[in-house]
Amino acid sequence: MRAAANATVPTIPWITRLTALPLLLLGLPLASPDPARASGEPSLCAASPSAADVEVRRTTLAGLPAIVRIPKQVSRAPIVLWHGFGPPASETAMMAALPLDDVPAVKVYLGLPFFGERALPGGMKELAQRQGEDLGLQVFKPVVVGAGDELPHVVQALAQQGCLRRDGAVGLVGFSAGGAAALYAMSQRQAAVDAAVFINPSTGLTASVQAYEQVTGRAYAWSPASRELAQRTDAIRHVAEIAKGTPPPALLFLQGADDSVIDAHALADLDEQLKPLYRDHAQRLQFTRLPGVSHQWASDPQALASVRKAVAAWFRQ
Image: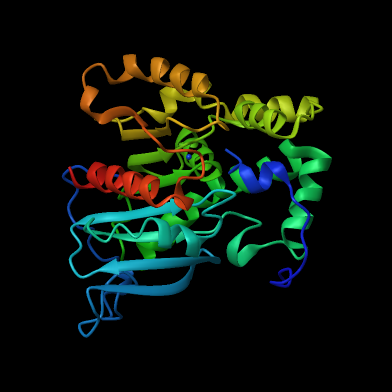
């Protein structure tokens, strides 16, 4: 169940102002259909002959609700997109913010656990309660780590649906909490990722706690379990896994110059740690500061246009 649309929810600074925390497929040919679909059953990612330029389908992948956006022409492997805590804060809102119709790839919009089609019974009020009890173990772990752990199952389902080769790579886009989920998923090496875009991302639980403390003025009570989680999700500790590959995945980090939520120093440190691993492939790693863009880029028409342009350009080049 979800909270009623008109329910009164108290203002939760971190949830309302902070999205808890962020692929180009260079030369990758269009994925071939899965052999299991040789019976003639159409692929989930194949546009209907009678469809308009873009076709949108709601479905489930590995039991998870998803929105699939299919352009008429597809020449690259699917791109999986995760929203943040908002805005955009659901798979539907993420599609509205980043339709990316000028990118010749199927876009797959997934809702983070506790959001969108998987919202908690108590809605934002229940999420705020979890945050107050333990941001790390009650929110970050099930939402961010949970989403990252779901990615290999989603990729497998896409292969079974004829959307890519069984051993094919996908693209990733993640905003804030979704960006943290994408970084964590890449560090786990359970799904092949050829390229990714991270929009105002957190680099892990430590960075998210810092943002939470700054926004709310409350100190987070660390525990042995949350400290272990912080180490496991710290992207800077796992740059070797994130950058592994020949060539390494193409990574674009978009940081709003006016973002007052995520600490820019963490992203700068991540940049410095990744650079040596991209010495022979410098064009596949880019950190870009976007002028006039805040953490809530989707709410500002000019910032939204700037982010859309940068994401689409990265996937098309």
